[in-house]
Image (cartoon, rainbow, N blue to C red):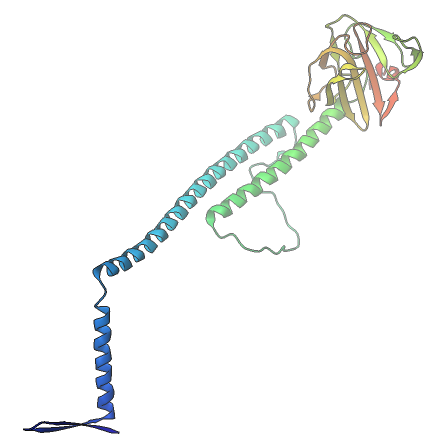
Length: 302
Protein backbone atom coordinates (compact mmCIF):
# COMPACT_ATOMS: atom_id res chain seq x y z
CA UNK A 1 0.00 0.00 0.00
CA UNK A 2 1.32 3.45 -0.98
CA UNK A 3 -0.02 6.95 -0.35
CA UNK A 4 0.81 9.70 -2.89
CA UNK A 5 0.58 13.37 -1.87
CA UNK A 6 0.57 15.94 -4.69
CA UNK A 7 1.30 19.64 -4.06
CA UNK A 8 0.95 21.93 -7.06
CA UNK A 9 1.47 25.69 -7.44
CA UNK A 10 2.08 28.10 -10.30
CA UNK A 11 5.83 27.70 -10.04
CA UNK A 12 6.38 24.22 -8.63
CA UNK A 13 4.97 20.78 -8.27
CA UNK A 14 5.77 18.31 -5.42
CA UNK A 15 4.91 14.66 -5.29
CA UNK A 16 5.46 12.63 -2.01
CA UNK A 17 4.99 8.91 -1.96
CA UNK A 18 4.42 7.40 1.55
CA UNK A 19 4.26 3.67 2.12
CA UNK A 20 2.28 1.91 4.87
CA UNK A 21 5.13 1.69 7.41
CA UNK A 22 5.97 5.39 7.22
CA UNK A 23 2.30 6.29 7.55
CA UNK A 24 1.93 4.30 10.80
CA UNK A 25 5.04 5.89 12.25
CA UNK A 26 3.74 9.34 11.44
CA UNK A 27 0.37 8.61 13.07
CA UNK A 28 2.06 7.31 16.22
CA UNK A 29 4.22 10.40 16.44
CA UNK A 30 1.23 12.70 16.10
CA UNK A 31 -0.74 10.73 18.76
CA UNK A 32 2.17 10.89 21.18
CA UNK A 33 2.45 14.64 20.66
CA UNK A 34 -1.21 15.20 21.46
CA UNK A 35 -1.03 12.86 24.48
CA UNK A 36 1.93 14.69 25.98
CA UNK A 37 0.26 18.00 25.25
CA UNK A 38 -2.95 16.93 27.00
CA UNK A 39 -1.06 15.74 30.12
CA UNK A 40 0.95 18.87 30.30
CA UNK A 41 -2.25 20.87 30.48
CA UNK A 42 -2.92 19.74 34.16
CA UNK A 43 -2.58 22.64 36.54
CA UNK A 44 -0.02 22.63 39.37
CA UNK A 45 -2.88 22.52 41.86
CA UNK A 46 -4.07 19.21 40.45
CA UNK A 47 -0.59 17.74 40.62
CA UNK A 48 -0.19 18.92 44.25
CA UNK A 49 -3.56 17.39 45.12
CA UNK A 50 -2.43 14.06 43.67
CA UNK A 51 0.77 14.19 45.75
CA UNK A 52 -1.14 15.11 48.91
CA UNK A 53 -3.59 12.25 48.35
CA UNK A 54 -0.71 9.84 48.09
CA UNK A 55 0.89 11.25 51.26
CA UNK A 56 -2.42 10.89 53.12
CA UNK A 57 -2.52 7.19 52.34
CA UNK A 58 1.06 6.78 53.55
CA UNK A 59 0.30 8.70 56.76
CA UNK A 60 -2.70 6.47 57.50
CA UNK A 61 -0.61 3.36 57.02
CA UNK A 62 2.12 4.80 59.24
CA UNK A 63 -0.45 5.53 61.98
CA UNK A 64 -1.82 1.99 61.77
CA UNK A 65 1.67 0.55 62.06
CA UNK A 66 2.43 2.85 65.00
CA UNK A 67 -0.76 1.82 66.85
CA UNK A 68 -0.03 -1.86 66.18
CA UNK A 69 3.53 -1.43 67.46
CA UNK A 70 2.33 0.35 70.63
CA UNK A 71 -0.31 -2.30 71.36
CA UNK A 72 2.20 -5.07 70.79
CA UNK A 73 4.69 -3.44 73.15
CA UNK A 74 1.99 -3.10 75.82
CA UNK A 75 1.01 -6.75 75.46
CA UNK A 76 4.62 -7.83 75.59
CA UNK A 77 5.14 -5.77 78.77
CA UNK A 78 2.09 -7.41 80.34
CA UNK A 79 3.36 -10.85 79.34
CA UNK A 80 6.77 -10.14 80.86
CA UNK A 81 5.18 -9.07 84.18
CA UNK A 82 2.98 -12.17 84.15
CA UNK A 83 5.97 -14.38 83.48
CA UNK A 84 7.89 -12.80 86.36
CA UNK A 85 4.90 -13.37 88.67
CA UNK A 86 4.68 -17.02 87.58
CA UNK A 87 8.38 -17.51 88.30
CA UNK A 88 7.98 -16.06 91.81
CA UNK A 89 5.01 -18.40 92.41
CA UNK A 90 7.12 -21.39 91.42
CA UNK A 91 9.82 -20.34 93.89
CA UNK A 92 7.26 -19.94 96.69
CA UNK A 93 5.76 -23.35 95.90
CA UNK A 94 9.21 -24.92 96.00
CA UNK A 95 9.97 -23.44 99.42
CA UNK A 96 6.54 -24.35 100.83
CA UNK A 97 6.70 -27.88 99.49
CA UNK A 98 10.18 -28.49 100.90
CA UNK A 99 9.11 -27.24 104.36
CA UNK A 100 6.00 -29.44 104.37
CA UNK A 101 8.04 -32.51 103.39
CA UNK A 102 10.42 -31.84 106.29
CA UNK A 103 7.60 -31.27 108.79
CA UNK A 104 5.77 -34.44 107.72
CA UNK A 105 9.04 -36.42 107.80
CA UNK A 106 8.35 -37.83 104.34
CA UNK A 107 10.88 -39.19 101.88
CA UNK A 108 12.29 -36.14 100.04
CA UNK A 109 12.93 -38.28 96.96
CA UNK A 110 9.18 -38.75 96.51
CA UNK A 111 8.49 -35.00 96.70
CA UNK A 112 11.46 -33.30 95.05
CA UNK A 113 10.14 -29.83 94.28
CA UNK A 114 13.38 -28.72 92.62
CA UNK A 115 13.62 -31.48 90.01
CA UNK A 116 11.59 -32.61 87.04
CA UNK A 117 9.59 -35.77 87.85
CA UNK A 118 10.36 -39.02 86.02
CA UNK A 119 7.55 -39.71 83.57
CA UNK A 120 6.91 -41.94 80.54
CA UNK A 121 4.42 -44.00 78.62
CA UNK A 122 3.35 -44.78 75.05
CA UNK A 123 2.87 -41.91 72.65
CA UNK A 124 -0.75 -40.82 72.34
CA UNK A 125 -0.55 -37.61 70.41
CA UNK A 126 -3.36 -35.09 70.62
CA UNK A 127 -3.72 -33.06 67.41
CA UNK A 128 -3.29 -29.32 67.82
CA UNK A 129 -4.19 -26.53 65.43
CA UNK A 130 -0.83 -24.76 65.70
CA UNK A 131 2.58 -24.98 67.31
CA UNK A 132 3.97 -22.15 69.40
CA UNK A 133 7.35 -21.11 68.09
CA UNK A 134 7.70 -17.83 69.88
CA UNK A 135 10.35 -18.17 72.59
CA UNK A 136 8.47 -16.09 75.16
CA UNK A 137 5.19 -17.97 74.75
CA UNK A 138 7.05 -21.27 74.90
CA UNK A 139 8.66 -20.18 78.17
CA UNK A 140 5.26 -19.21 79.60
CA UNK A 141 3.81 -22.57 78.60
CA UNK A 142 6.69 -24.34 80.34
CA UNK A 143 6.22 -22.21 83.45
CA UNK A 144 2.48 -22.95 83.53
CA UNK A 145 3.18 -26.69 83.35
CA UNK A 146 5.58 -26.38 86.30
CA UNK A 147 2.98 -24.53 88.38
CA UNK A 148 0.29 -27.10 87.59
CA UNK A 149 2.63 -29.98 88.43
CA UNK A 150 3.73 -28.43 91.72
CA UNK A 151 0.11 -27.68 92.65
CA UNK A 152 -0.71 -31.36 92.13
CA UNK A 153 2.26 -32.37 94.29
CA UNK A 154 1.12 -30.01 97.06
CA UNK A 155 -2.43 -31.40 96.89
CA UNK A 156 -1.10 -34.93 97.32
CA UNK A 157 1.18 -33.79 100.14
CA UNK A 158 -1.70 -32.01 101.87
CA UNK A 159 -3.87 -35.13 101.66
CA UNK A 160 -1.08 -37.27 103.12
CA UNK A 161 -0.42 -34.86 105.98
CA UNK A 162 -4.11 -34.43 106.78
CA UNK A 163 -4.61 -38.18 106.66
CA UNK A 164 -1.69 -38.76 109.05
CA UNK A 165 -2.92 -36.01 111.33
CA UNK A 166 -6.53 -37.20 111.50
CA UNK A 167 -5.65 -40.88 111.74
CA UNK A 168 -3.55 -40.13 114.79
CA UNK A 169 -6.09 -37.96 116.61
CA UNK A 170 -9.55 -38.49 115.10
CA UNK A 171 -10.50 -41.19 117.61
CA UNK A 172 -13.29 -39.61 119.62
CA UNK A 173 -12.93 -39.77 123.35
CA UNK A 174 -13.36 -37.58 126.39
CA UNK A 175 -15.61 -34.67 127.31
CA UNK A 176 -15.99 -31.47 125.27
CA UNK A 177 -15.24 -29.43 128.41
CA UNK A 178 -12.31 -29.11 130.82
CA UNK A 179 -14.55 -28.50 133.85
CA UNK A 180 -18.27 -28.97 134.47
CA UNK A 181 -20.75 -31.81 134.73
CA UNK A 182 -23.12 -33.93 132.65
CA UNK A 183 -26.56 -32.36 132.99
CA UNK A 184 -28.73 -34.18 130.42
CA UNK A 185 -28.50 -37.56 128.66
CA UNK A 186 -29.20 -38.82 125.14
CA UNK A 187 -32.71 -40.15 124.43
CA UNK A 188 -36.36 -39.32 125.15
CA UNK A 189 -36.80 -36.63 127.82
CA UNK A 190 -39.21 -33.90 128.87
CA UNK A 191 -38.66 -30.80 126.79
CA UNK A 192 -37.39 -27.99 129.09
CA UNK A 193 -39.56 -25.40 127.33
CA UNK A 194 -42.97 -27.04 126.71
CA UNK A 195 -42.79 -30.05 129.05
CA UNK A 196 -43.69 -32.53 126.29
CA UNK A 197 -41.73 -35.72 125.53
CA UNK A 198 -39.00 -35.03 122.98
CA UNK A 199 -35.96 -36.77 121.58
CA UNK A 200 -32.67 -35.33 122.85
CA UNK A 201 -30.02 -36.22 120.24
CA UNK A 202 -26.97 -35.46 122.36
CA UNK A 203 -25.47 -34.88 125.79
CA UNK A 204 -25.55 -31.61 127.72
CA UNK A 205 -22.50 -30.60 129.75
CA UNK A 206 -23.19 -27.68 132.11
CA UNK A 207 -20.56 -25.32 133.44
CA UNK A 208 -19.62 -21.70 133.89
CA UNK A 209 -20.14 -19.24 131.08
CA UNK A 210 -16.82 -18.44 129.41
CA UNK A 211 -15.27 -21.87 129.99
CA UNK A 212 -13.48 -23.35 126.93
CA UNK A 213 -15.27 -25.84 124.69
CA UNK A 214 -12.88 -28.56 123.46
CA UNK A 215 -12.75 -30.71 120.36
CA UNK A 216 -13.05 -34.41 121.22
CA UNK A 217 -11.08 -35.43 118.13
CA UNK A 218 -9.07 -34.03 115.23
CA UNK A 219 -10.88 -33.01 112.08
CA UNK A 220 -12.00 -30.24 109.76
CA UNK A 221 -14.49 -27.51 110.68
CA UNK A 222 -17.58 -27.78 108.47
CA UNK A 223 -19.84 -25.33 110.35
CA UNK A 224 -19.01 -22.30 112.47
CA UNK A 225 -21.73 -19.83 113.33
CA UNK A 226 -25.39 -19.44 114.18
CA UNK A 227 -27.83 -22.27 113.48
CA UNK A 228 -31.49 -22.59 114.42
CA UNK A 229 -31.97 -24.28 117.80
CA UNK A 230 -28.23 -24.64 118.40
CA UNK A 231 -27.33 -20.98 118.76
CA UNK A 232 -23.64 -20.55 117.99
CA UNK A 233 -22.61 -23.96 116.65
CA UNK A 234 -19.32 -25.65 115.74
CA UNK A 235 -19.39 -28.80 113.59
CA UNK A 236 -16.33 -31.00 112.99
CA UNK A 237 -15.92 -33.66 110.29
CA UNK A 238 -13.57 -36.38 111.58
CA UNK A 239 -13.63 -38.47 108.42
CA UNK A 240 -15.28 -41.82 107.58
CA UNK A 241 -18.74 -40.29 108.10
CA UNK A 242 -18.09 -39.29 111.73
CA UNK A 243 -19.22 -35.78 112.77
CA UNK A 244 -19.47 -33.99 116.12
CA UNK A 245 -21.46 -30.87 117.03
CA UNK A 246 -20.97 -28.37 119.87
CA UNK A 247 -23.95 -26.06 120.44
CA UNK A 248 -25.13 -23.03 122.48
CA UNK A 249 -21.67 -21.41 122.54
CA UNK A 250 -21.16 -17.81 123.56
CA UNK A 251 -18.71 -17.39 120.68
CA UNK A 252 -16.72 -19.60 118.31
CA UNK A 253 -12.94 -19.59 117.89
CA UNK A 254 -12.66 -21.37 114.53
CA UNK A 255 -13.85 -20.90 110.97
CA UNK A 256 -14.99 -23.26 108.24
CA UNK A 257 -12.07 -25.12 106.69
CA UNK A 258 -9.83 -24.99 109.76
CA UNK A 259 -8.05 -28.20 110.77
CA UNK A 260 -8.32 -28.74 114.52
CA UNK A 261 -6.59 -31.12 116.91
CA UNK A 262 -7.97 -33.21 119.74
CA UNK A 263 -8.45 -31.11 122.87
CA UNK A 264 -8.21 -27.79 121.01
CA UNK A 265 -10.37 -24.91 122.26
CA UNK A 266 -12.92 -24.34 119.51
CA UNK A 267 -15.48 -22.15 121.30
CA UNK A 268 -16.51 -20.46 124.56
CA UNK A 269 -19.35 -21.91 126.66
CA UNK A 270 -22.56 -19.90 126.64
CA UNK A 271 -26.33 -20.15 126.43
CA UNK A 272 -27.25 -19.05 122.89
CA UNK A 273 -30.12 -20.55 120.93
CA UNK A 274 -32.72 -22.77 122.59
CA UNK A 275 -31.04 -23.01 125.97
CA UNK A 276 -31.94 -22.55 129.63
CA UNK A 277 -28.41 -21.83 130.91
CA UNK A 278 -24.68 -22.08 130.17
CA UNK A 279 -23.84 -25.52 128.78
CA UNK A 280 -22.52 -27.40 125.73
CA UNK A 281 -24.90 -29.52 123.69
CA UNK A 282 -22.67 -32.31 122.34
CA UNK A 283 -23.73 -34.56 119.44
CA UNK A 284 -22.08 -37.48 117.65
CA UNK A 285 -23.33 -38.33 114.16
CA UNK A 286 -22.20 -41.40 112.21
CA UNK A 287 -23.03 -41.56 108.48
CA UNK A 288 -25.89 -39.10 108.96
CA UNK A 289 -27.48 -40.85 111.97
CA UNK A 290 -27.36 -39.50 115.58
CA UNK A 291 -25.43 -41.67 118.05
CA UNK A 292 -25.38 -41.76 121.84
CA UNK A 293 -22.19 -39.82 122.65
CA UNK A 294 -21.79 -41.45 126.09
CA UNK A 295 -19.73 -44.46 124.90
CA UNK A 296 -17.36 -42.05 123.11
CA UNK A 297 -17.04 -39.80 126.17
CA UNK A 298 -15.96 -42.66 128.46
CA UNK A 299 -14.06 -44.54 125.81
CA UNK A 300 -10.80 -46.13 126.91
CA UNK A 301 -7.74 -44.86 125.07
CA UNK A 302 -5.86 -47.34 122.89
